[in-house]
Length: 203
Image 1 (cartoon, one colour):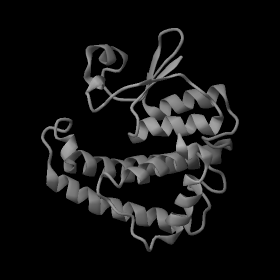
Image 2 (image 1 turned 135 degrees about the horizontal axis):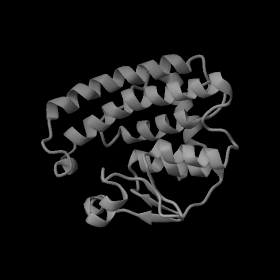
Image 3 (image 1 turned 135 degrees about the vertical axis):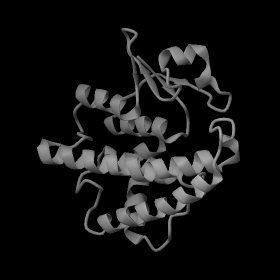
């Protein structure tokens, strides 16, 4: 088994943080995105979408999509549970993980890909106006999270989950997307400090 990893990009980091929370070590194969290694013919055989991360199993099977990879490890190593427990717990984690992905993450990604000069060769054509629109939408999503965290320790309740991992790596990714978290979002700041202080956040 080995994990093809893309460094600081959010989805690659999400899997590394998840594995760290589980206490698991998986051999890592670095993929240099700056040198377009994910566009190579060899890598494309592993993932036709040319994205990281990719988990290669011992039998030659490839798993792509970061949440699918995390679910695989959750099934093999259910403790600590990071996808929730019980019907309501699992559904709540799924709800918040999807909310972060479909709203804040997609907005930050659009702002980065369409607004950062270094992405000009990756996003063709770049549409700067779309970056601006999504920066504004991201601020609204951040306020929604702040409102929710006023009454909750973590996104899905009292227990840290993959929803928090997704939000953590997304918010840390907002800086290169040129999105600044408003300083008045105190509940979000409290939550971020706690999550960023976990040892797994350094993965």
